[in-house]
Length: 278
Image 1: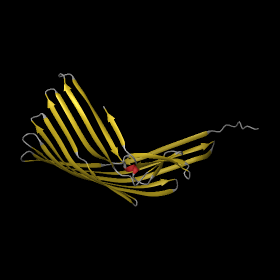
Image 2: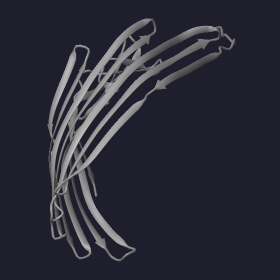
Image 3: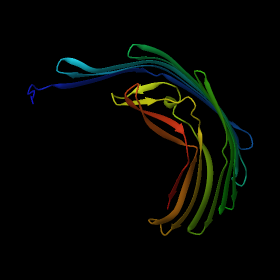
């Protein structure tokens, strides 16, 4: 049996470089109308020109054993407009109506090793809500909201459209130094844009993050009950409980790809999640 006592020097070098230019512009207009009415509008836009470069190299002595290079030239723009109308009544109750629309557009040129990929994503969100806040002699307050959310995402040859109904209700009762509040709400949860394209990102020689263009936004349901007791001007006692439930939320699948010799992580809509706090 023979042994080799010559040492081998393992060297790993990793470098990252980024250049980001993201100017933005915002306009707001508020106008007070007769009879306790108010109109508010807003417009926001931003532009992005971002470059990312990442590479690593692993050497055994002076020979390259493993190397990878990833470059991204990203151009993006975002536009959002909002209109809100509010009416306040004599008993301090109020009605609010709001409409908003936003658009996101990204175009990425991605270089992985020697291969070039052109990856684009278009996304729009339309939201409408009507909320009514009703007060009864500063003892009972009822807040009710009816809202809808329409989301559309297209990337490559895939497109996903989601429709959500997101109501909200809160009841607050005050008696002397005690306050009791019960609320329930439904909200839509947006998926990160980075996970919605078919692009992949090699974190290192062992792991690859892969996007999923079939991802969908999902729902969150919340309920809470809170009791407060103002003992004095310095002390306050609060207790309560809350819980929320995710429907068809995001999980990550992990599997080994023999062709790429790496573990792939991919986001999917799968299963539900429930959390209770008390």
